[in-house]
Image (cartoon, rainbow, N blue to C red; front, side, top):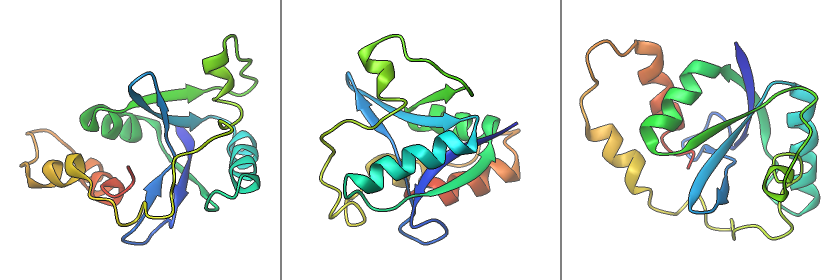
Amino acid sequence: MLVHVLLFDAGSDAEGIHSLEMSGRTVVLLFENPDDAQRYAGLLEAQDFPVPTVEALDREEIEAFCGQSGYEARFIEAGFVPESDEERLFMAPPESNRDVTTWKDDEQVTPSQDSEKESAPGESAELDALRQRLEGLL
């Protein structure tokens, strides 16, 4: 199943994925509906955030990447209705955002450590390719 995520500088060496910091967790939103992802991207842009690209990725692969990287993948189904203040952040970004003017220059310890590990037996080549593509995302 394909899900839609928000990527910054998609396809470049400085590629990044949109995430939320919530109660000490890093949450990556996986939108079922591409229109919901596009709307969220527009809300980020309205907050003077860098303009993200909506990318369709395999749900299992992005969830595996998130799990191995210590991030929480949160599936946002079509027609999602928030039931708490925290869940409202899945429909509209917070009013204050992390300073992203230097996000491309930040050192990212977890991804670089992941790239030094050997692949576990049974991991698919597709997962390795996705991991390499997403290393710089967070």
